[in-house]
Length: 148
Image (cartoon, rainbow, N blue to C red):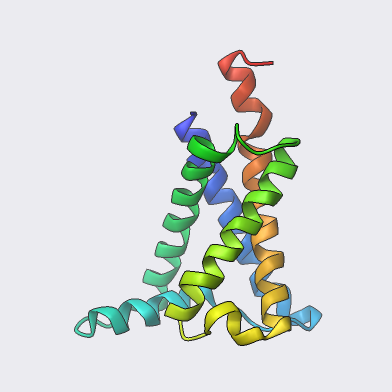
């Protein structure tokens, strides 16, 4: 596993997903304010220390890197297809995890309480994240390792 490349893929994928989430309202999808949602959840969990949105954005980037490391270490060689296809599958898996764990923690409910528009916005963001992680980590890591 190329840890530096995976971490870079996580940062780039998270930045792209964040940029998409910021423009989604302009195409009719709801605003998904990841930084604010994560900081509110962290504040509620600690109940003693208020967290600002910047802390939520930092956690978002760190999670993006951690998930990319999991992708590189566990899923990259096990998923079928090209790097982008593997990344898209990974994006769907992260989306499902987010809907099962993070959405309820942020008050959005399990699978965003069935809000189709919110689910589509989240899925689109995770597909962008996953495809970029797959592409950036992809074939270059195999070439560096001397794999076919």
